[in-house]
Length: 333
Image (tube, rainbow, N blue to C red; front, side, top):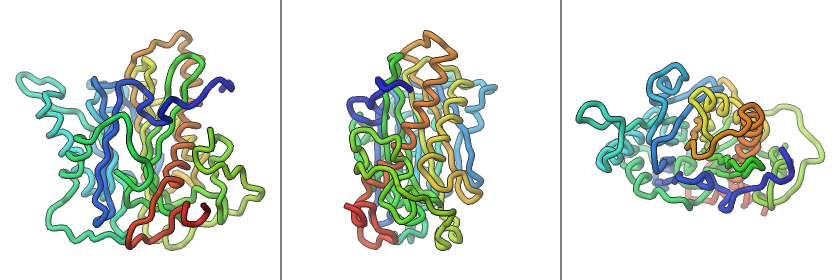
């Protein structure tokens, strides 16, 4: 990528025009939901590289399937319970008159993915699944500006040694295209090198967006704290978006490329106990002048933006009562 590639005005996924993000959370339960919403339906692909995914409507995102566009994408806590967040969002979209038209009916297409945050110190003794409510609230909160850290799907997230969170970042390419990343980081692995404070993503940092601690001077052998390994309480789920005009197959390739961002920012990534997944969304507002070169740089931008978003998630996390892990800020600020 050339040096003229820079973050967008917000340094958020909503630097891709026509997209909004909504978050809702319950700090007592220590969980939440996040929705990416387009002004219009957008083309979408997905790629899963973790061994323990939890998803809704991802089969229809394969390049050979009939429906190529979706109305929204959902990231949620709650493990399998959290898949119900997409139901609340689908209900809300249908009430707004949005969805795939079949006869006189509208069916909102709302793929989603979940992470496991059920043993993070929150009160999970609910009498009714809260995620449909959280999904509907996230939809109502959708805007171009949104908070990072302990919010939305990142509310109850953890990593190997620090509190997790929700992150986002963007980049504008010399071609005129914008790429943005959104991610809920609940990884088995660590985002910092050794005991920190340096982030694995440090080589890609822009404008001191996650503390400007620089790169680590030494790198440890592989070690994963046994508490996180034994609990199987993991998964990093994300979305990469662009205003480029892409097919569903090209979106799938973009999602694959974005997974390099996980590998650059998490140590280790894509483990059998993580359900690591990335959706790719294209609003198709800007055509590709050079389909080969442009898609190459879009993929490269997707990986670097995703790595930065992961570090920003942990950097932005805030402490709450009954947390099971410290925040990066509490440890290193």
